[in-house]
Image (cartoon, rainbow, N blue to C red; front, side):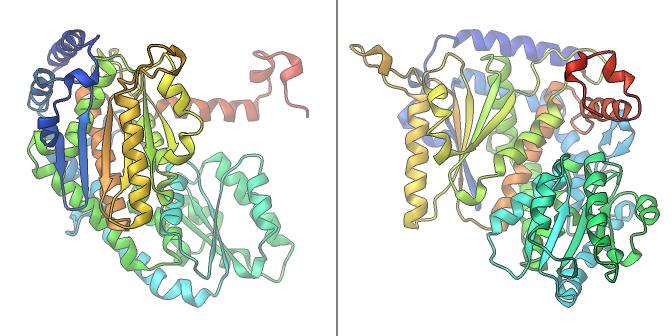
Length: 494
């Protein structure tokens, strides 16, 4: 397989040279625009504004078979894929499956506990504030879901993780102990940022000794022993599988806080959207398969066109945090250089994933995109359901795609010229609901997995992140680590 990937890399490099100096306008045929649109019930994917020709697309569509992608996807959906470097299974697709798997029975047990909590416990507790102590994927997913639903419910939901505790202290000023519950979301229950915030909350509850802190404390973790050791009541514990990565955990009880103001059916709608994306990815032919085409184009732009960054811009305010979520999903998964053979990958791996809410980005970073010297590939994500507000935003999206790809030349005023030629794809959502969001997020999950399969890397570990954690712990317990490596003027004051 190593030799096959080397051949793929070399072929992509050669095909890229064929269109190095070719503009998207020269490659685009208005009669064939429909050929480069993949339509589904929930979302359409348009890649007609990519800088690629039919010859290159034909070769890209050979790659899935060259790397036995069908087998890899089958194993992923069965829960048989291994995170090799950490020697554990990968289970996130099973969290949205409708049928129970005897090896992952905990998923359905916990789903019933989520249902019970949302239908009964949450209402009987009679609290006004929920503070979720979480970071990384454990925060980005639920926070995105909470923003997306935009509910004016009875419970104020806050997310806190800052190590300086300023975020948490600002929140606590608006809360009272008797009306507040705390959810600690940490797969390991060892994350230093979360434990520091938890200690702060515990001290805050001590100000009201008549209130039992542990009656107000809930935890979501893979480590039952750690939850027990901290004194969290069994009835207040929610468990996730150790095989569930943080950046893939949005389908589990990790997202429970985001549904406090909605209901269990809303949670099921999210799962159903993801399950439909799983079906699409399993069943669609390569040329009609959205995550396959997204992954192939991603590898093409990075390795054939040498584009080192990928912007994701959303054109609906309820999706304003989606880019942060996808950025972590993509770069923590594929931001690596060593392949399965413990050698450096032949390919350039994950580009920088950045972007944001498009309407705001147009008035800042788009200047760099339009006239800077660095090329960017982009995804534009918008809603078009016929309502006036969405039509206006969607028209804005399309106009920016034209500017980004086609550009405009002013021969008499070169300072006004925009070269364009930034390859762009459009993901058009048909409805702003949780099913569509689940579908969209799962498509990006599968894109990441398929990219990793092509690149020959493990998308499920994060040893770079682990090194940072390790050094932070060493510096905390051994000040000499810092003293030996930094000027005394930079050292923290004791």
